[in-house]
Length: 376
View 1 (tube, rainbow, N blue to C red):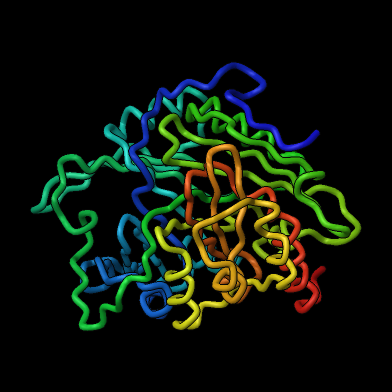
View 2 (cartoon, rainbow, N blue to C red):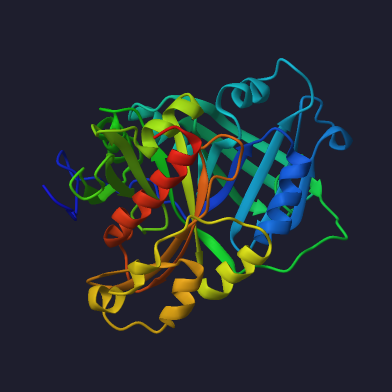
């Protein structure tokens, strides 16, 4: 079997009974939220937005919220031992805990998911302050990742009730990141189809693409992946599982060091990837390196493109084309101590796919990093 694009899952057709407007925020549990916020501001160009901590009455944890265009990251750390946040960090290291989804009715979304078999993360709760009311609810996904439904149509505050505006003299310029394009999850071998069914049956997503180990492999490692999307296409969740190979795959490495299933990478969109990546590199963000020979036959493989090939070669930006157009993408090295989560920078020029033509080059680059770590 090769790459497959499908309109529906193999079982019953998915129904978009849970309209989702977009990604509201991503919450990362991190060891030091203050330092993490400074890193994402300095390296990635986020700006200060909101804060919750001792000064706001939160005694067990603190959160710094940073924002860039439509991307909001909530960076949360414990303030004492014995907390759920601390336990999560002790097991998994820094990583994504919550994917918050912006909906019109958080109670309806929760009730629909629960009656279809979801596990509750939090029942609907109305949170209020002088700026209005937000309703939030939530369900569990793979591993310990939660999806929180956020209804904010009656709220005019900075972020959420319980947070105060974070005033900072240090507001670095944007690097041109616009919104979350997709978010990839790594699950245990044999569990990919379970989670595909979960997103179809519980949340009304549809499968839009499938890759097997013939598509995503090198001489040593392989994986399989299926891409789930909500009705309007604003939420896309590729789900990876390892496939047998001669050596340990990147998914196997992730599962070992994250100690379970979780978010492998966050793909964020830009309108000018050359400018964005140049800026990110100047701020110290490290990217996977690609052999320059990749570019020798680039135009033969993808056809004519608008960008200067030498600029792409210098930066290590990959290009792929599908029936709708082409895309440009590049992947950071992992952004925390454990070899787990990383970021993808992507610019779509019509393409709706995920860069199948780059998988081999990308995986070989990841394997070079694994070899340096002694985990291949």
